[in-house]
Length: 132
Image (cartoon, rainbow, N blue to C red; front, side, top):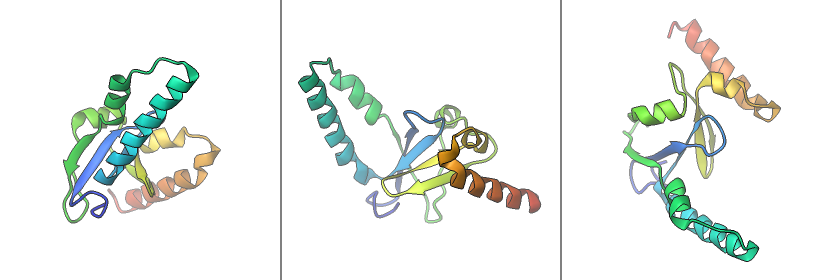
């Protein structure tokens, strides 16, 4: 995360289709700008309306926050509410982005998420056994 953020900046937002949050580094900003251009070009080719300002607000509406050397950060309340985050948090993924889940929300996902659900259940069981 440090390498993709010019330091220690985490970008967090509500995922557009899942009940979770999505996190990424600042290096993703140019990719989002290119996505915005592609979506506008496609809309023009298809003769559809495209509100660039609204879509830009959606893509770039993430919250930037610092994290420490251990990866800890303070999640703003509005993101916690949007992501339905309660007393547990599961991180999944890598690459261009990762997701942050309330385990109960992850459990409702389909079979494509079997591996993530099993890992989350295992981590929860370990935490419960340790009394946390």
